[in-house]
Amino acid sequence: MSGKRIVRSTRVLVDGAERAATVHIAGERIVRIDGYDSVEAGVPLDDHGSLVVMPGLVDSHVHINDPGRAEWEGFATATRAAAAGGVTTLVDMPLNSLPPTTTVAGIERKREAAEQNVWVDVAFSGGLLPSNSLELAPLREHGAVAFKCFLVESGVEEFPHVLEDDLRRALPLLAETGAPLLVHAEVSGPIDAALKAQHNLSPAELRKYIYYLESRPKAAENQAIEMVIRLVREFGVRAHIVHLSSADALLSIRDARDAGVAISAETCPHYLTFTAEAIADGATEFKCAPPIRERENRERLWRGLRDEIVTQIVTDHSPSTPALKCCESGDFSKAWGGIASLQLGLVAVWSQARERGAGLTDIVRWMCETPAKLVGLWGTKGALAAGFDADITVFDPDAVQVIAGPKLEHRHKLTPYHERSVSGKVCATYLRGRPIYNGTLQGVPSGRVLSNA
Image (cartoon, rainbow, N blue to C red):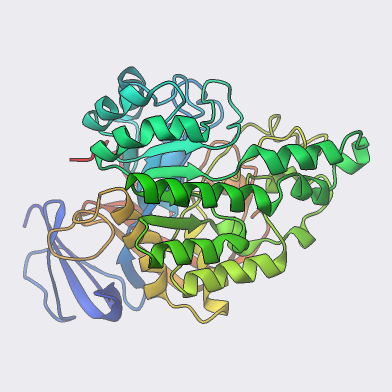
């Protein structure tokens, strides 16, 4: 029967539980979820046995850099990696492309670059700069699902950071859009002081991770988050702290949330996996901002997830060329700060989560449901439920694999996960009811550009 499909498993993650079930699909949507033996004559049946059938992941923090810097990463390669990693929806960040997504012309250029070139569904966030407050409403009308700002230098001159006075001018206008503000929460004061104390480091010292870690102290994050909480309380907007690294800020976020302040936070697989103590000299593939911190800090972030202070996990996929990562010199002070992990988020997080007693329903909440809700896509994305898009990931949680960087789908294969053993394997990915990955990419790109509508 054309346009229909049934996906079945003894382990379907639905309504916060795991059970044997059939997912009935008509066209692009899930129409119902029934018992395991609910099949229909003439309807194609994909029986996945005892593999886990779960919602497609929603990664609300991805840097694709296209157009303008597609030599770092482009829509085609990034979304191939997404599909192979079980990600069916992603939100592209507004910087590192040329032009940045800070004007209507910029978001339209993004749309042109993405259309008919993406393997999964893609949405865009707009950028908040010191000078573009009047662009927020038009960007929202043209599809921006959120707005991103930096409180410290972003690393690219065309995306300057904002100060408190800039936010005071912009937040009333942001509030009118109803969109959340995604905040890179570091302020420059503690960073400047740390760098001043490190003057005249030798080339050998610049290869040591400890000096990079000390140059981005927790105080930079902690002070930034305190400022954001104060402004959110004053202006009544929604703010979301991206890539939380400092576990010291957890109590501030918890207390603000409990007091009714509309603030939330995410963290990333690399902060939950790696530790500063284990990063070798010159291993610039580990550099990101904020930095990967100590083992004790990692465990506190995991407790923050358990306690629902941190509510989601996204990759902050931010690749660049090997030259920009300073692979040859190993100089952390010059290397681009960003980790390529879009294809690896699920297996990286699951590997650590299962060791700490978390389950696959926790993964669905952290990596599917909450990111979809943040950017206004809940109702079509983030769950296996009637009326939702039939975005499905088929996952083997008990498989063990060793990551081979050269075999990854993103453009440049450099990743700190290379040769790391992980638990779990994405076996298949469906986008709106159609198989797009089963160990290799299937068919042609059929992803869509989504909006806030």
